[in-house]
Amino acid sequence: MKTELLRKVVGLAGVVGHIFVATADERGTPHVAAAGKLSSPGTDRLAVEAWFCPGTMENLRRNKNASVVVWDPMADVGYQIIGELERIEDVAILDGCAPEVEKKTPTPQVDRRLVVRVQKVIRFSHAPHSDLEE
Image (cartoon, rainbow, N blue to C red):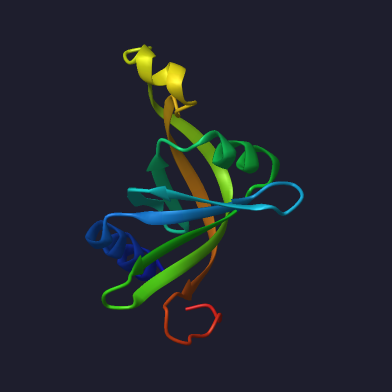
């Protein structure tokens, strides 16, 4: 895997301030979530950290395939990372510090890090582009 390319992806995510994570359930029904933190803990790994909603977590437990999109819409520069979930790490857990919020909607209770083994990196933009690997 191109280590320099993954550094570029992580750097762009830091500039943009958010990324998107796409998953699908066992039937192929897609789901997209937003996250804010992206890092590269290894030469062919990316780590995404967020308070992921239950739909994302349920999908990943049944279907390990994921896509991560980093895109700067102003410059129309971005990347789509195709990969497979390697592991889920719990980073922080709420302890009922806001019970009034928990009663209103089912909010995420655990900050998680998804470690994704990168299989392919392709360009992503609004303009016409190729789906060939970088």
